Amino acid sequence: NPDAIFITPSDFWSLRHPRRRLAITHDALPELDRISAGSALRRFFRRQCIHYARHATLWATISNFAAEELTEHFGPARRPEVLENWIDASYRRPPSAAIAALRGKLGLPEKFILYVGGYSRYKNVESLIRAHALASRQTLLPPLVLAGKIPTAQSGLNPCDI
Image (cartoon, rainbow, N blue to C red; front, side):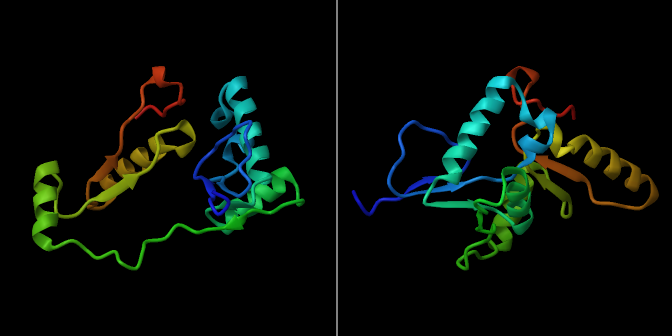
């Protein structure tokens, strides 16, 4: 289909290059932080993904900060466009009964601090946990809740140690 657009919402590389494609690169962290970069094979793959993204019809990232980092690291020849994270206008808060039911199912208190993100070492979740524990000794804070699947050391994702 000549009107089709191939979208890569995360790092992606292929020998095939569809005519029209949108490639999204989250940030330049793997290039800036050796721990995040991973193995030599993973660094090679990332370089291929960046090359693929920079030659896409549209190269995008999630914030002006990320666009500046990517431009600074990969050169000014092409700055990614910014497609900021957003919530669709159709989003509505669920009914109170549905919230209460989910809170009960998950055993969550009325108020809590929620972390939703990855568990790679560069996310520094360990510091978040230590900071919450330290601050909780000095003032009354809601409990900290971590969401998501925690990877194992065997997953190869260089997880943090929570």
